[in-house]
Image (tube, rainbow, N blue to C red):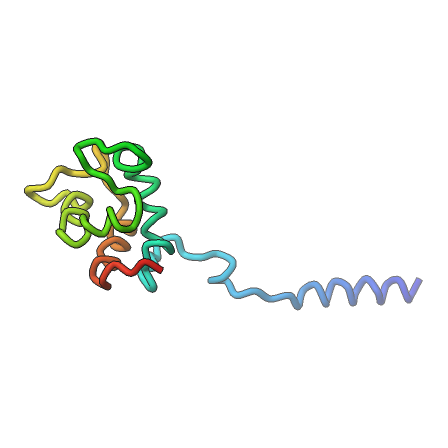
Length: 119
């Protein structure tokens, strides 16, 4: 009986020694990661989820094709990508009927600022 009690106490004590970093377990959703922004790493996902239904995969509403890095880079280089996503004066606000979140806009701005890296 004494041996079983010792085993139980050791099990409880050892289980209590497990430690994880709080920031790793519960990342702050309020933090926007704009480090190492590339087309394939972050930008593609934003464009695919917010823009492709109208401007990708064969759709070219408004004669705008954002399908692929080369096509998107044209709009990044001429300022239209940031103009439309920030809803700046003189640009047709996109996506229609809404607006990208601040983090997504900041990621796109950083991508343009960094020279539109692909990988």
